[in-house]
Length: 320
Ligand SMILES: [Zn+2]
Ligand SMILES: [Zn+2]
Image (cartoon, rainbow, N blue to C red; front, side, top):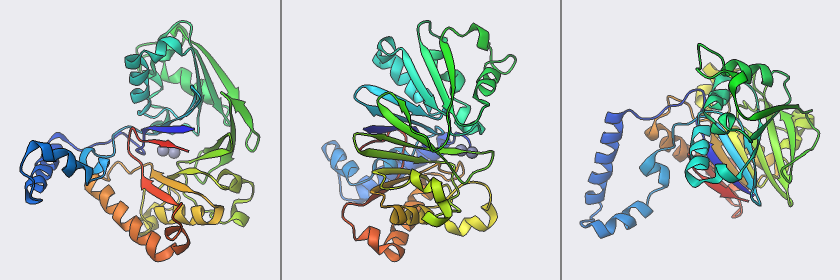
């Protein structure tokens, strides 16, 4: 399985402003010379010593994830990041060959639906789009997005065939050669995470999750989402020190993610739903703090050479 992260931000698309990017690149150039480099053929070496987001940022799009296996794929959520996927389908020509799209919706907060009107297959004859959700409202939500005067193209004039499937939590659904099971997350209105399984590999999607419940006994059936996941995609919008004022908002922290990983035998964790107010510098600082937290408090994970973790960036692909 390959999991591709087309949008990793939370709440609203956000990015550095032009002047901040200019300042960032000036700092990188100063760093290049301060590190003793002098010529263009040393640029590659200089860049290889930094992580990709330290150079290019974490991206601006909100949640959209694609799970790919043997030329078949599922999409989870339609944040503004789905525009990146849509552009990729068009530019690569893949859109000509792919007639079916399968989209799982976690919930309907704006950052998870705002990309729907910009997903090009909706406008093309011969395409079939399948939406899956536990909540019953998906059809109403999608119809409302394609409504004048907030969007110029009406739902009735869309060329694709669109189907809405209601799924039940804790039941396996076979879609595109993968098994998908929905579990309840700690988030208002409500919100569901998805466990995607194929060929003994597990991707666990837990974005928009406050992780108030962390132990198996507190989670009950919902603990099934995390069990022995090869990759857990986890909401770490905040740090624990911020949670006093953010309690009940439905977003988690890296501490809680590490604890879930330790409790449920998770092999790799990727933190996302980055706060719109967290700029590049803030996220790099979060990452440094997370490294300290891991070493100080979760020795069973930090001493396990198989365990991996990171803060997700737009366009990242993880193979499991
Ligand atoms: Zn969200
Ligand atoms: Zn939400």
